[in-house]
Amino acid sequence: MDKMTANQVPAVHLHQIAYSPATLAGIKPGYAVLDNLENLQPDWFEYWPIRRYLLSQSLDEAAFYRFFSPKFGHKTHLSHAEVVQFVEKAAPRADVVLFSPQPDMGAFFLNVFEQGETFYAGLIDAYSTFLDSIGRPAPLRQLVMDSRQVCFSNYFVARPAFWREWLVLNEALFEVCEGPGCALKTAFGEDSNYKANAAIPRKVFLIERAASLLLITQPKWRSVAHNPFGFNWSKSGPNQHVTDAYISDALKVAFKETRRQQYLEAFSVVRERVLRGIAAATKATAAPQAMLPPRHKSKNHKSRKKK
Image (cartoon, rainbow, N blue to C red):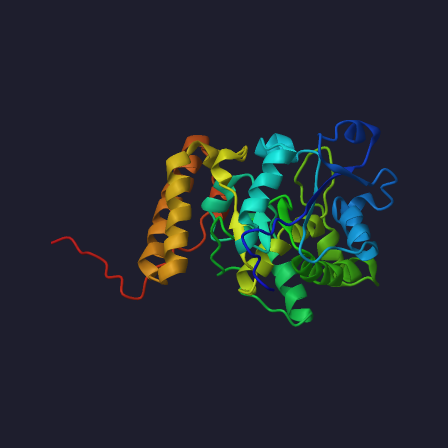
């Protein structure tokens, strides 16, 4: 993609999804409406209206597009004007601009798949099998993502080229889920147990992680992230460990920039201390154990023996 000159300001097309009269009435000033009032396939949540738009509309290749859920403003505390301003400023060096909430969930886990596996067991095996089947294998348990690749809730703004790649990946998953019965279709349709009062199939959470996967596996995409630490944190125990979240993300950044294994080992030590502290405080056993993947040790690490 040709780099923009300083004088070129791209168009930024921001939509909010309306899936009920209440959400339609709650569209914030400045946003265009992405009409999903018919909600013909509610099991696909946001993907259904976004998919319809991308498959039916002509897009300006230099512009940025996004289709936010009604909770975007609540989770990020950003107005339409603030989002546009940030995207315009980032545009000369970005194909994708991230506005990801829950920074503790991004900081304390190696990547969005490890985080997902912790709360929605079986996610990694199902998605790994899928990626292998379409010729896009990826080491989901080993990928290291920092706040420059982590994206939750589909909160990103992107140019059409990235949206097309995102759509290709997710359409392959869509075809599995809408096709004949098979083990993968069953796995993708399983309830994630995300909410007690709403069944959300695993496929929805996999689609929400597609942007992060593309950013980490395809270096051609340039991403700029809004500071996530000013957005809403999760409602889980790690949200009480603010400074450790800053440190954990910084250690992953340092590892990715230098490839020094000591940074990754230090990250593992910090997050293990945090998660074990949560386990002790809540007197929990099974869940925190799942939140403690194997510690990453550098090849040059030497244990110190007491004399």
